[in-house]
Image (cartoon, rainbow, N blue to C red; front, side, top):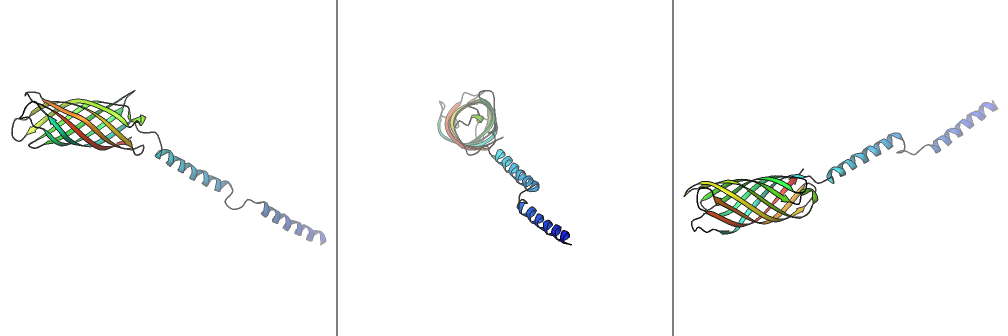
Length: 198
C-alpha cells in the first residue's frame, strides 16, 4: 500500500513538473506556422507595393496653347488640347506612340505621332525630354480641311508619387504644317497630366 501511494504521489509531481515545463500558449508548431504565414503575406504585400518601378506607361495630358506663331495671317491656331499615349523603355531611352487632339476656334485637329523620350521611366529621374513627329488631320468648319505634318518637342518634370503613378508638367513646342497648303503654325504649350506605369 505504501509503495502504491508513493508511486501515485510521484506521478502527480511529475505531471506538475511537465505542466510547468510545457511551452506557454502561443508557442509551438501551429503558432509558428501561423506567424511565418502571416509574415510572408505581409512581406509579399510590401514587396508588391514597393517593387521595381514599371518600364512602360499609359499617360494622359491636358495641353494649353499659350502662344501661336504663323507666317500666314489666315492660319488657324489651336487653343487647348488633349493627348494620350503609351510609352515603353528601351535600352538607354524610351519610345512612345501618342494620340493628340487640338481644339481651335473654328476647327479641330487629330494627330498620331511617334517618338522618343529620355531618360527611361525606370530610372526615376524627374527631368526628361520628349520629341515626336507624325501626321494629323485638320478639320475646319470654315475653310479647307486637310492633312498636316506635325513635329513636337518638350521639356518636362515628372513626380513619381509611387512606383505606379506619375504626375508631370511640361513646357514644349507643338507645330504643324499643312501638306497640300502653304500654311504652318508653331505653338508654345504648357501641359500637365498623369501616367500609370506597369
